[in-house]
Length: 254
Image 1 (cartoon, rainbow, N blue to C red):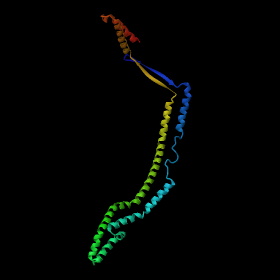
Image 2 (cartoon, rainbow, N blue to C red):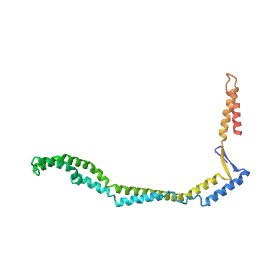
Image 3 (cartoon, one colour):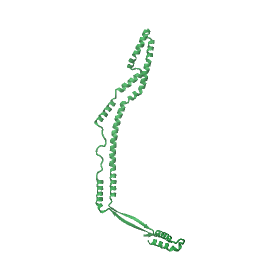
Image 4 (spheres, one colour):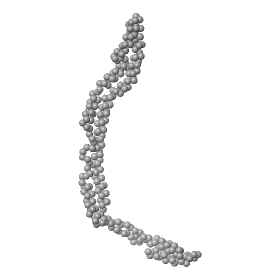
């Protein structure tokens, strides 16, 4: 076919694997189909999460039970701090007793036992100790309050461990589900990759285009250059024009 001074020629070439390779390729294709139709790959059938040991179960159960029941040390400690803060701790009164007796003895020697002077003297003598105990109780109050949440904190820790275990089991279930969902498309992709890589034969079509005008121009230029190389020094190129024209014709005939 020619159009505008040009022509197109199509060359079709067939390619095929060597004869000795044909059985191996056919076997590979049959195996690819067999693998695609088989139930493999399969997810690990058992649980992929390590469960709690009996010791861990007992420890968690005991911690939970103790946290729910509550520790008697918490309210007792908070009560002591409150008594020290209010000055009603009986042990504090017992600790102050030596100071009170000393003041009473001095008042008795002065003949003022049981008087207002004695009471004022006792209060004045106990004031530094009472103030010190009150300030200590104020400093201990925040810790006593936080101590009240100890049982709840233990219960929360037990719950966090349980939640982490449940989260690991859920993640394993999700991974198994995703594996099952992706398996058909993954197997199909593997199958298509195998059969494409194992194609036994095929054809390659390569269009080739040739332009006679371009060939003529190239031939004329080449001939002119060749003729110029043979011109004597100082001579004109016009006398040797037939050589160039002849080269152009040769290009058209090629």
